Picture 1 (cartoon, each protein chain N blue to C red):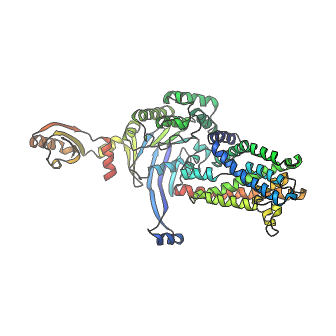
Picture 2: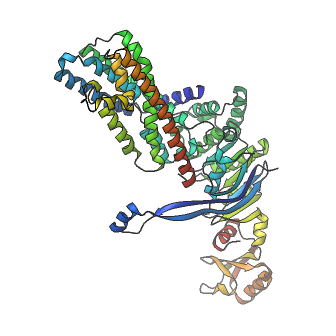
Length: 251
Length: 325
């Protein structure tokens, strides 16, 4: 943990120098929840979806992952060779940068959230928000592992960005961002509830907005734990295959 | 007792190839063709603790690939390697804490936004160096590498020579037992290169660290390494001292002649190594030197000066690269 803390501090300092870039990333992250807020509040004013989209904005800022920009680029630039010489698992480097970027997201994104709250005051209950916090942490972990596993495709192909982009599109469509899961067609909704994309984004926002009853919250947490375990196994398997290829082919 | 042991090392890659043209490009979507590239074919050697060894060879000989295998970055196709009792490609933390790989092409692999001091502190954290040891080692490194003015500066603002000095401190602050130096003086000016050589020599003597050095600059090899390993096309072709290599090329000496007719056919006297203006350097077999010298003085009336020298190391190595040992 001390080492991870060191990497978080190191990358926090590094991203201080890249604050303009961080600002554009946060702006990109904020656009779709805000568009969703505007569109769905107009289409279904009686559903009070503003709570959901404000929570979604916050969850998105806390769970965004950019391993295609960090890890994959590092592989392409040849710097990953240096990470292999470190006396600890190289994933710590990537995870440290991920957490540092998320801290910057919160710092830069808070004024945006505050402005939205002023514009459309939410009626969130603190009990729901507290209940959602563990789900946000789990969502952040699942999203990191998912993006990391996709970014590992840099070991095989030169366009890992497109692979991670496909993953982001699936999260947008089936994670509760294009539309809240409850509003999806009946044929799609059960799938969306079970697939990992909701666990990465929409589920914590649904809890915070008070849209789920006790049983639904329990089921959602169960899916999160299952998907976390699946992502750990998947990321490890892809890492092992990728590192075998990298060290045999020469990177 | 050895610090580095390499036995029958081989490394081959499969690289994709395709014929030119659109049709070949489409065909390669279904039938990918590969070519096997043998980067290292047969390399065996061992290095004793504290030894400083030059690992030299022409471009593409397999030097960097071998160093990457020894540092654990690459997994070889075949062969056995042991470095300070570890198999490098298992990349165990206990092993990685004992080695350092320093590349002239990237002398300091720390984030450029950090100051030198921050980067060194970060190394302390990663390699779990106790505070007292860190302060002691840093004090020595700062003194030997004249780092004091650099400590508060951002890495991005350092010149190449300063980066190499800071990079040496960064790589050695945890006192590794084995150093792999891959062309460490690449791009450095004469002063910075000399400082680097002096420092590496002193560091090895004082800490007993083993050093394996690749370089295309013979000054590095000459000043640091008593022993050299020569590799060519993936094969070890020589393992011994520099004098031994010169001795193997000993049939030759250099006759440097000033003066003589401009149109004279110098190849009658020996191999013309260099000819510029009124000066010519001839490579002549050692036993033929007295006779050739006599012939030159007898047959070329306008000779102003004539000296006999051992061939410089650069030309010996050049000859070895072109013709083999």
